[in-house]
Image (cartoon, rainbow, N blue to C red; front, side, top):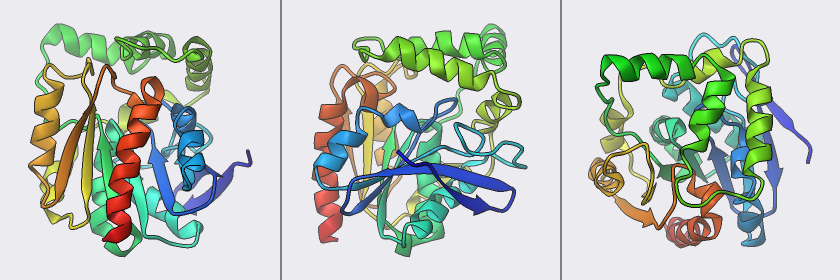
Length: 266
């Protein structure tokens, strides 16, 4: 598949497109790349959607050296992809750190965004003890340790190609300058996306893996996210971890198709 690029002030954003139909833009989480959605993309394309899978700034084939990796900037990148593909309204799907980005995009250019989906969104910045902070700092500086951490986020099911995908992921993160963006996308910034959420007027779907190990109470986190929006629904994906598009792609597809049927009528 051909990789396309759209220029932004400070670099360029890589993405690839599959299928035809209404536009869906997929944004991955910290440390991953557009291939995070490799199992969901063909299902969405077969369901009749045009799917743009984006490399978040500093990740994958997108350039590094950006002055900021804040969610508002990533949201602007997603809007640039939408415009590069002829304009919206598009449905934006953001996993983990990118869940915040789709919220900012929806409020920055509402005419370009028909709906947003937050997958594994973090509502609060957790307070970590000293030992956990040290462990986190080590993971965010070492591709090898990040790969080991990534493996823990599939507590129930693991894709058949998981080991090979992770090997490629770690290899990509070993390139010069690639770990700084991993740290950059989760640097605390103001305003936090939760302050922006009440301004969103498009339909919102909050998705959460029922076994997501990043949260002590995944269902509670999903409900907390849902309550921030004027119009939102929260759904749990059974036996999924932090990446339901990888470990439960068919179940996630069903939720997305239901949601996008609503946005098409809005």
